[in-house]
Length: 336
Ligand code: ATP
Ligand code: FE
Ligand code: MG
Image (cartoon, rainbow, N blue to C red):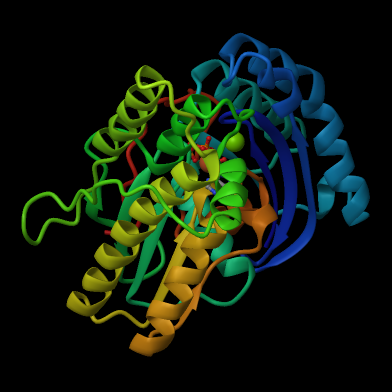
């Protein structure tokens, strides 16, 4: 298959052409981060407006870089959810119009399935596999027994890992998005402020990061009250050490329990160097292959949507012109 994939769930306007769910023919991402930076987060209204401006530009660019015309395509795929509804709808309506105009089948894809399938663009996924999904809105451990099968093993009960990163970054007066800045700072420190590890009940694969975030806020507050200066790098390292230790330990325990063939990381926070190093060391020791996509495939892009959509298309999943944005869409299996 040759699938034109479109992604507009948050603040990147993206289009890509993917062959057979594995090969990137073209991959175009237009980021809006600069427009949202001064607000310290994504402003939905601004995001939608950018998507409107950039949508046709990135689609045309994806086709021209691939040196393809619409008649070369098998299907059009688009992120159906979750995400900002106004942002999703720009991509969905572009996909509908394109599919209708060129008489192509339409496939609606889950954004997190996309993040997981980013890995399939690097090496074939082998099952059973465990995916650690860590992004701006999600922190989940997902078990896959075959293509299109998703079982939620654990998830965050409050903040997502990326959300915690961005909030702690704000406390440290770092620019948005804060994840990469905390990561960089953490590597500059040799000592770390000691923050708690939140394990929850014995045996739980769930996560909680809001307490850790509060611990950082309280630490800063107490230091301010005493008139002492915090050392941002040591705070960053303390926070990152806690997040990474818990994510790594729970992923390892799940990988053992479900006897998986591969562990993969997915989502923007898997770009984190501390997390990558920790996962790499842990799973090298354990003898389970670990894969983390290159940075540009960790954060939002359309290539990952095209990779997931290939397997949906092959399984007979089809959308239609009634497709709507689904901001709270759940990750469900498409194989029964
Ligand atoms: P979702 O995929 O859940 O809908 P999203 O699309 O906003 O959310 P992504 O684009 O996958 O999330 O990831 C963005 C998040 O990744 C941000 O919170 C950002 O701070 C974080 N991030 C990016 N790079 C790093 C890094 N090196 N270390 C930690 N966090 C990072
Ligand atoms: Fe994402
Ligand atoms: Mg993003």
